[in-house]
Amino acid sequence: MAPGRAGVKKELPDHFKDYRHVWVFLELERGNVHPVSFELLGEGRKLADKLEVQLAGVVLGPPGEMVEDAVAEAFAYGADLVYIVDAPPLADYRNEPFAKALTDLVNTHKPEILLLGATTLGRDLAGSVATTLQTGLTADCTELDVDSDGSLAATRPTFGGSLLCTIYTLNYRPQMATVRPRVMPMPQRVDKPVGRVMRHKLSLVEDDIVTKVLGFLPDNQSAMANLAYADVVVAGGLGLGAAENLQLVKNLARAIGAEHGCSRPLVQKGWMPADRQIGQTGKTIRPKLYIAAGISGAIQHRVGVEGADLIVAINTDPNAPIFEFAHLGIVTDAIRFLPALTEAFTRRLSPHSRDKLAS
Image (cartoon, rainbow, N blue to C red; front, side):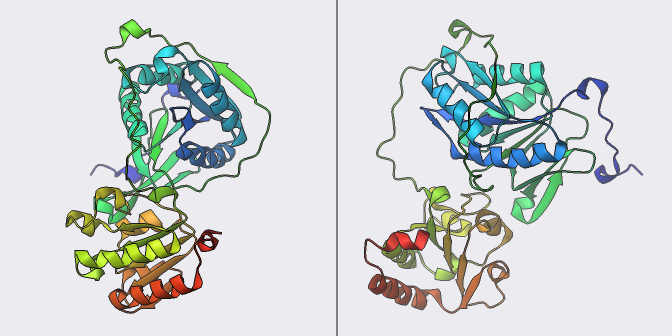
């Protein structure tokens, strides 16, 4: 009988044994670094310290102030050094030049761990780089650690979110993982001088790249939710019974200056748009206050909310899974309770004091 994966001993090929250090890709677009990059620098710092290696940031972009500002931020959030590839073809994200730049960097400087944000850009880039390097990639991780022999232990939900599994990349390097925004806490920013910077030349010119950027049209009218970075969130689930009862959630959110969201079944029913979904297959949130009304709290939802500072659960079922991880549980009918709670908040909070909930 063949041994299971857990019994396989890692024997790293000789040509991978000089791969060291932890890298974090800093997602830079339109002049801003995505906050998930800073969250990953905080997590990367922990991994690097355990491995007793350096933490490096990777910045790809056009020459100029935008890249230099990103480099300074990388050091402020814990990087020991930063690798830069700055060239005009990297002004806007395109898979071909970005994948080529990052792949060449990896082959030249040999990191043992490479972390990227599980954003639209990060997922596209990570898949291309992992395929080109013929290494493993664990997507949408909820926890990262290193085991006793220094291997990256990347934990993520599986089987539709019903289980958590830990994945190892046994005999390949780098070990790659993506992490969704807000899964990891934001580290403390500390101003400090720019440290060691290593520049690498992009081995592509514009004429070599098939795709072309004709222009940029900002979506200034977007009504997409900003759940991931909201300080207060109110969400509803199937326990509300009908689509019209979601108005109770929206009313409470409006009263306390919160974002509103829902669990996955409501999106599947068409009661709310997908950008309002909270959970493993939706948004991961880390608010200071999360109020869940009529949500059972299956593991798919728990993965997306357990980073909240305070979770208040309202459910008629005293055995609902959400009460296992909520900080405060209220066993009652949310349809009757939400209007009373909204009225109480409206009486107590003036428009100028609503931000106190997030303080």
